Length: 297
Image 1 (cartoon, rainbow, N blue to C red):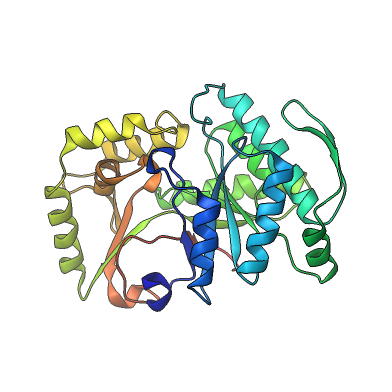
Image 2 (cartoon, rainbow, N blue to C red):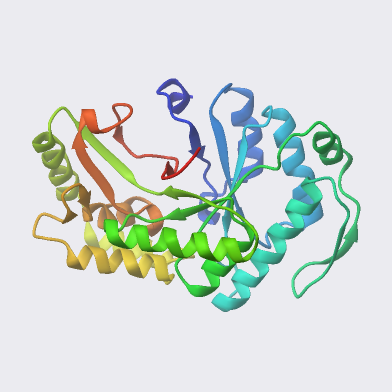
């Protein structure tokens, strides 16, 4: 509710196994106490069978008046261990199947991970007949397997903060990959944002934030995360190592929060941007809980 009141467009709902929260149930509850803000529901491929998930998503879309968006996750289902290639293959099958059902179409799939022949849930058919779009899928990853998966299923490709030249390169690469699948793609940037009245105040806020970090605790939490060994997380570590003494990789890209995020939550929260208030559409202090759009909304 606070995020909606402060003008945010989309909020990522918690999904971590250790939190003990069922994300779809939580989304349903949040939908009833908000009116405008979109709900970015994190879904880990394989945790729920596709037919059941299609019913859940169709119901949530009805309850939320079409405000649902999906963050596809490819990390291991708790208690299992698959290779990276297998996990992304499962994600591709899983969300291809989900999109088919939510489009009101019959699903016929005999894949490695999804094997089913089933009609779509009636609610999904009804929404499709009324022209209601399938919730957009947000997805990110830097390995070749992840990029190929994204090219096939993602509507918005999420990137961790990086230097400007690398962000541009990845966007160009992903645009080409999506084109080979006959698709187009939008882009998002996962980041924290620190904003003050002046740049010096923003930099001081970043310094104070980092001074409160217990690095040992942060490293322990990061090691427990299901995506702690991903290519994207490794790249964030590289960025941190390349930063100057104050933690800056570029003028407004501060890598200090790679460490800070590890001490708070998941390593995939990424870096932060710091700067003056007039460089932002709205004045914000703290965590950006939705991907910043790098292309059309």
